[in-house]
Image (cartoon, rainbow, N blue to C red; front, top):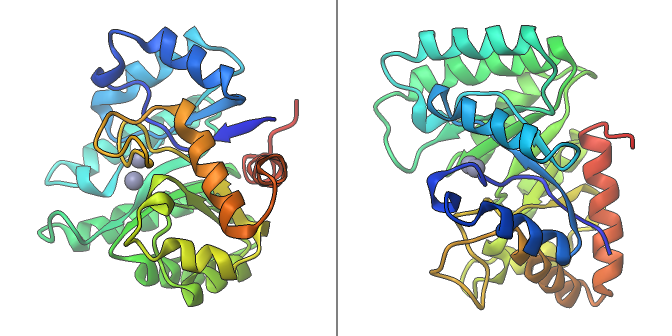
Length: 257
Ligand SMILES: [Zn+2]
Ligand SMILES: [Zn+2]
């Protein structure tokens, strides 16, 4: 069984002491590739270091997270642009809109998101979207800027069935993680109604730990609990969920081994 963690922050300090073991535990559970979303300039070196330390397993993204869009966001975007022109990244991300934490910089978040969508098109790489309490707004912006070069993932998808259908119609994917195991999330009911054609798996480690480990640090080995939960909801075998979501991840990241 092969799984792909399409979104994990394994480069952060929470993994400082046992990063090697975290990787080994994940590989033992069948997780073969790890996509590392950028946040801002402070994490760039750590992401690139992980990619060097785990070649063919860890893949760097480049982008500016909406929660890092502050007064200095123009300088941050300049760095993103420089990096994109210097080498190839697996994706543009994470970018998007976050209406949950801080509403001060929403116009700037829009500006940063739009510019990053343009770069994703220009460089022919998928865009990884953070859409906390802003799923429909992110969908609307993708529709507005859509052309056939554009694809990507609504990571940590938590929207409605109607929003899921719009995302699928755009040829985009939804990243499903630990939230699907939370009893009151409502996500299981959406997944039940949704074909797996546009679903990929993610942990968002160290955040959003699935049951039965909710509250502890998340790590990529726990991706199997997410896959098992989806298998239970869809009354499928976990191997089937693994095959489908892995092939979706290959498509969106245009991965060829
Ligand atoms: Zn995010
Ligand atoms: Zn993230």
